[in-house]
Image (tube, rainbow, N blue to C red):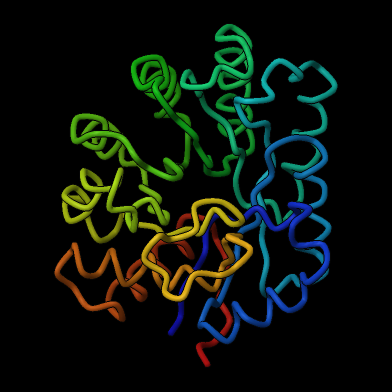
Length: 267
């Protein structure tokens, strides 16, 4: 297996006590590369530190999640700008809009998102995007800057068919997580995933979140890990009508091309 996890929050505190074992388990499961997600100043800097410790296995993103957009001031922008110049930072984000929880004001979210779009255009790195219950405003800003951008991924896609078509029309990649393994709320995604072109599909764990509900037995801690991306792969393959190996090959190639990463040889 040769599988890329394009989004794992490995700087999360839940991994502090067994980080090395988590990495070894991911390697054993056939995960050939992990992109560590940055979602604020601290996590982005931590993601970079981890990436430099294992440069052949990790890359990372740098940005401010919409949940913390209220804290995105001039100093925050400067921190992301400085990180964006690092070779191991392969994408700008996590950034976008989240009007479901509104942990930050709409105005702050729109401002921070546009600043990230401008930065991605400036440094010519792809975007790692978040959108929840904010499609109209999100799409408008993305369209505004799309011609200046090298591309990006709509991370953890959970929206409807119309939104999927909008993102594909902008030639964006689509990230699929363990949401597709959820029989309660993932049914629509299960029906849509086959509509994602093979060259636009990406897979991600979003660890420690979104533990696949189809895992059996389930881990006692309920913590998701990159090794469980294989469960997402199996679900995507089933709903796409293609083999797991084919999906793994396609999504790994997509990740390598979009993010400019070199993959470890499969074991």
